[in-house]
Image (cartoon, rainbow, N blue to C red; front, side):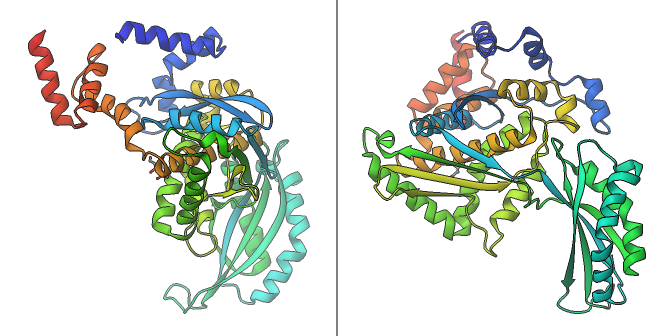
Length: 425
Ligand code: MEV
């Protein structure tokens, strides 16, 4: 396809999604350099990535078009394919907990741990009240400190910097509404620290949110009819059983779990990035949660129903994402992403994200358990190789097809084909 035709096709795709001309313009122009310069230090450019929309998602009975930003070929196609399989069983069911984040205050040199803990417990209602109603930097219409937890962390032995081999950690639990909440919590931790020092008689060191936000969770399930899994080579039940075997592989082997979860995060990160959220925070939380039982394990689980009619998938992850504040507010494409999904709350976004993670995982392990992933991957990968070899316009598809036909998807071969093409022109 020529560049001109491709541009028209992309524009048509965007308008078919019902995007307003203003939204289409926002996507085309992306992040302005002066905005970027306000977002980070030493800015020299903006860095673009492909953005697409995953098809076929039905979540809690609603059709949802899901924007994804990702550089890896196949991710969107695979995600939409798995969503179609889930759709055959009624789509995804998703839920989430209240958006509660955790802030941490580390307290050292506490003279009497038991007495300090008791004092902090007793003062907890007053401290929360102070944060919510008296301290100007933490009073908010949308967020609220809702609890304190006191944890005692023993060290295995005295350290040169900590002769008493233990310290206290005070957790502030924060209801963050539709914000991710990092700024709110960090402000609250810093504000509360002097009071914690006074009450405990100790010395505060770190004051920062925990990215293990295991009180802010999102879950999704889907029931794929086994019949929908049938391929020309395999009957549905055989493939469903192989998917369960793949799930068990990742549940019990950390080497496999890491790759399995990388596939889950292919989908999750793409939506997190499309909405201007902090994907490092989401990654850190997801992997820490996957290791919560002492061994790194899979983020999803797949099982057959008792009557062998359905393959059920499940995912539950910490999901700290917001729909207000940060890059979500300033990045024009992030705003369009939210409108595309027709969502208003952070919880709705978190629920969509885990559905995408589950779908992406199904697509990967289904392909691995059936034909393998290289067949589908190669034709898309070949296009990237063709571009890397300098192909543009029509030449991209021509060279990519040739690479796949020859089963030689390599840069050197693409470069040779490019040379030959130039020669012929
Ligand atoms: C590739 O980006 C992701 C996969 O390796 C995931 C998996 O193995 O489950 C295909």
